[in-house]
Length: 418
Ligand SMILES: [Zn+2]
Image 1 (cartoon, helix red, strand yellow):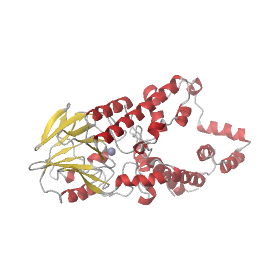
Image 2 (cartoon, helix red, strand yellow; image 1 turned 120 degrees about the vertical axis):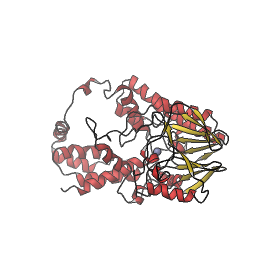
Image 3 (cartoon, protein in one colour; image 1 turned 90 degrees about the vertical axis):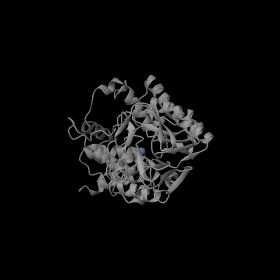
Image 4 (cartoon, helix red, strand yellow; image 1 turned 45 degrees about the vertical axis):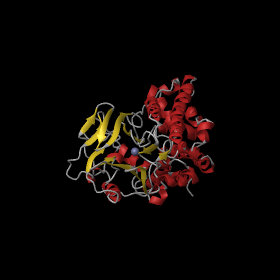
């Protein structure tokens, strides 16, 4: 039985077209990400476009029940593929202006086939993180989106922005007053949309109902923790009445929005401070990551649950992102190959057979995985046992990306011939 809190998190992806203010809507639960529509006098503006043409078509069909006015603008909040790959549905001729920030660019590494050393592992890791290929029910959810979503046309409908916005500016969306604001956070190129008259803020992925994904296990360059925290303060200063995020349900009410933005900012700053304190004290990254938790006044906030981002991973990312891989312990200046280390460990245990017995006897699932890895390096067939262990870990895991990765990798291990 999957983690109960992760199952309850599915409420964040209840499929609905939600009215945020008169003539302003968001579509939640149709795709990994949300999509929004603002109705102007004679036309509409679309904010973000989901990850697939099929999901975009489904949402457009719902939006068309509300108005048949033509689409005059598309706005991208940032360059992650789950927000930009349904665009062609809203601009079949490619003639609808698409606005994005001036530094709009994907932070997906390794996708350039002409790079000196293209990193092909990103694709595999992305599949694992989102559990692509697993039965939808096994996924439970994506942490940021529903477990079951259309996959047809995935990544197929991306259109380049046609207008790059250099700096914060006011814009008239066919009679609806808006301000485009640069707000680096989950990505450097975040541009939020603030409807000044009705008090609705489209914050992209700078906030959602989950601990922020300060590090994505699919692989991501360092995300600027401090800039993200600063942007949350900037967004709170707008005093929005409605917060419409790129993932999960919208939040209503000035006070509640101050609470969610302020506490998320505090959580990011807490991770930065505790990690820096640990590094200053010469503690290992393992010990910092194994011990870090949120203080009690933040830990009980439902929107800081580790459904998507994870505190320990964030701490490691902050440490490595600020000082690089060397943790200050000179032991780590040298390197043992995994085989040499495994050999030493087996010798210590009294032989490989003894190490296998230890692996099978321990109740510590993390230790069991580590022993499986050592034994595999020594030529033992641990694949089925490691797969069992990954599946056991998946069942207690609150983080959807970890759960999906455990299950996805277990499936891979089971298909490897022994
Ligand atoms: Zn997103």
